[in-house]
Length: 251
Image (cartoon, rainbow, N blue to C red; front, side):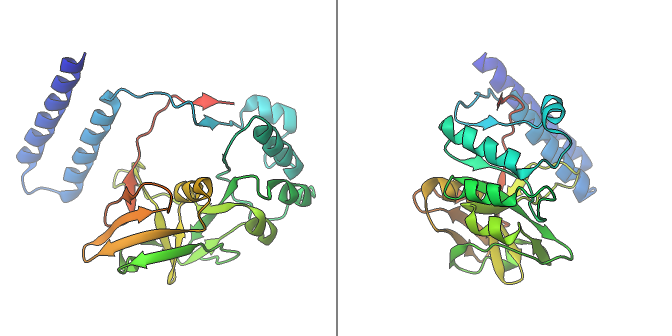
C-alpha cells in the first residue's frame, strides 16, 4: 500500500512536470491552475484520519422541520450552546454573522448564555459597510500590513454579542485562480488594523490568550503565533493550506 502511494505521488509529479515543460513560457494562469490541480491529487491520495476532537452541528432538513426556516429564534441557539456545554464541548465555533438584532427577541437570552462559554462567532470584511468591527490585540515583528488581504470595511456582530462572545473571527476566504478555496488567510487587514480569521481566533480562545503575534520580513509574512500554541508558518500573505477531509463527525 505504501509503495503504491509513493508510485502514485511520483506519477502525478512527473506528469505535472511534463505538462508544465510542454507549456513552457505559456499562460502563467494555466501553469498555476495545473500546479493547484496536482496539489489536489496529492491531497486526495493521502490517508486521512477522522478526528475525534471535532464535531459539526449541521443545520439539516430535520432541523428546519423542527425549528422552522432560518434564521432561528436565538433562544434556540442559546439552548444549543447549553446542551453542547453540558456534553463537555470545549469550544463552540459559530461561523454565523449576527449583524442584525433578532426579530423574534431572542438576543438577550443568547447574549446571557454565551458569556464565558467558549463561543466564537463571525465578522466579515466588506467592500462598503464598516460597522461593529471587533478588534483583537496583536504584537507585530516587522510590517505585515502591505502583504495582507484587505477589505475597505468590516461588518461585525451586534455590539452586545461582540462584547460577550469569547471570540470574534473573520470568515472571508481567498479563492485561487480557478475559484477553489485551498488556502485561507489567518490575518486580514482593514485600514491600518489587523483582524484574525475565525480559525486563528478559535485557537486564541482555546489557549486563553488575549492576543496573537505576527512576524513579517522583507518578503512578506513569515509566521503567526498565539502564545501557548505552536508557531504557524504561513505564505507571504499570511495564508495556510487547507487539508480538507469530507468525512467528519456530525451532531
